[in-house]
Length: 243
Ligand code: GLP
Image (cartoon, rainbow, N blue to C red; front, top):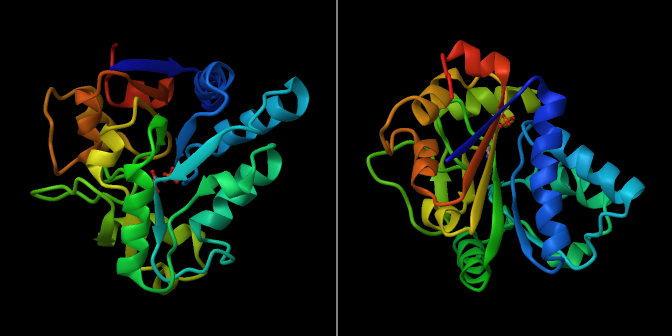
């Protein structure tokens, strides 16, 4: 696993954008696996700038997202479809028809079946990841066992707490989500994780401990042949990561 320690969040975002840019230039018709959450927002802004000012071309790129809340319409400002449009797709020359975010409303089982069908025929070139404070990836919550494919997940109380900041009240945070499984994530050709925010516990388990722990799904990154983790020096120092 490659670990890049950067001075600040701007440098983290630029380093992550460099990795995505290289892939987009080398494989202009590939599929990017994308993530929501605040961690990749700076990278998305940097990619949008490079598209606008430097001609980085997304016209042939496809994308598939990690997850979606159950119960939120795509037009809801906290849905992950809305997030992706607002933070990236509306600012680059990607064809939105080539972007896939699982549906959160309607028949959940049918949505999961459709999500799995999309994933089965998609080769994800690189999967962008954030990490939850409890180590969740996408919405794969810690557990004794983890899922291979796309599925419905019951959100942990700590995840509801962590994501409540985006909603008017905690009660409005959805209790369920549909998410890629750990197998889908691990089958991406490359993984790119941005760790930002108060993630000391998850970061320490991932970067310091030599353990694969289903109680911290982020640790599965260690098993991937082409995984990169990018974090700020402040967080690296707080957990005593020396490289
Ligand atoms: C949500 C998303 C995850 C994301 C996590 C961390 O739970 N489902 O994919 O990694 O939030 O978000 P943030 O980057 O805002 O800390």
